[in-house]
View 1: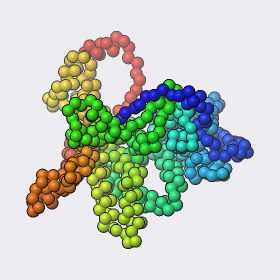
View 2: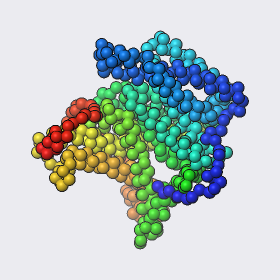
View 3: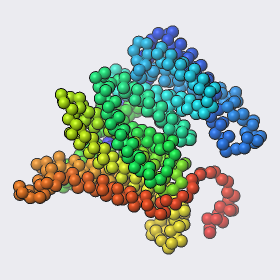
Length: 555
């Protein structure tokens, strides 16, 4: 990943362009939308704060005096005022983005949005009167909707060619994007988290559906349904290993889908040649292949010709693997760390994240399932079901297994890092020694489990990156070599009747990642120490007197 830093011109620094272009210029519509959103925010504020107060009911007795003072579902006045101000501020920020988010487009976009959300507000109130648990879903829908409008608004600002780039609003948009993204992965129960992410995915799907040309909508829906079938089958296969709550499984699947955002966003920046402008400099994202070629030719003496091309391609695929695996690891940690009680939990839920990632990749990338539907089912006069099923099965089995294997291995080492203390204690009782953590412990006088944890995390991340990057490199290798060999016979120049001519080059990585991947994951699932329930780790802030701390450290 290469960044080009340049100073801004005076015209860019003096630009006064608004962050989002309003959809409607009518003052009456703007006032109506503002009043409507203000009323809805006041109603939802009480629900929002009620949910937060309600969270303590499950952990404290109802007879507790302090709990009665807090009055669950009846927040204090200053809390209501502060929350209303924050809510109205976010709604005002999203107000100008409504007109650019389908189906709220066109001359009557804001009116349609105001009507829709007014109806949703009324239905939310009615649902809360009839069903007490609906409060958490109303809260989740509100958070997910606001986050969607903020993120899609920032996306429109970046990729709309009619919108001039302004450094001030670029920085403001990035801040709002980071806040909205963190809200999507807030510290809530799996049900609320899954509902928040589900709301975001729903709005994103609606926006994509209505922005597609009418002739393409059927292909998009069909491709999504077809891609969902193998994803569900993969989930059911690995869920048999260890039972999990349905809400937690859905949460991890949605999290995996959203973990595609960094690589898709960066790819869009490169394809649209978008420059991220700030006050004193600008960042120009570069294509990974171009950056890798520049690095190899400029820094490695003696590496030229075919070796230079192969090395640059390998580096670019390792960079892609780095971004994708770190993204999946981040959502796994944010969404599930509070619910892991064994290494098997981490391994299994990490695989669900990988399946969600592969599903979103198959749907979002126009070269995958969408292209298969167009090429083999819609374009020909007679659907070519054989070719279609061959491409779908190849993509559904092989590439899904690559994500499952690489992220599964990363999740296994992450699980060992989470339970580093108990694992080290058990292994010390069995007489096992870990030389590197032990040596660093004696040299630096820090706990051994700290170095053990870091060692496992680094091992997991590097292994996942190499597994991911090497697969992409191996399947691309035939197109890079002279003559574009497709079989082992082509590669080694064998005679016409040689058996090597019947062995495709792609069969080698396919066997390793599918057969070998299942073998590796089966071993990890059935190791006894991985099945052991170690409890959920809870982080607490506890005051320890200084004399007791140093006494414990000296021991």
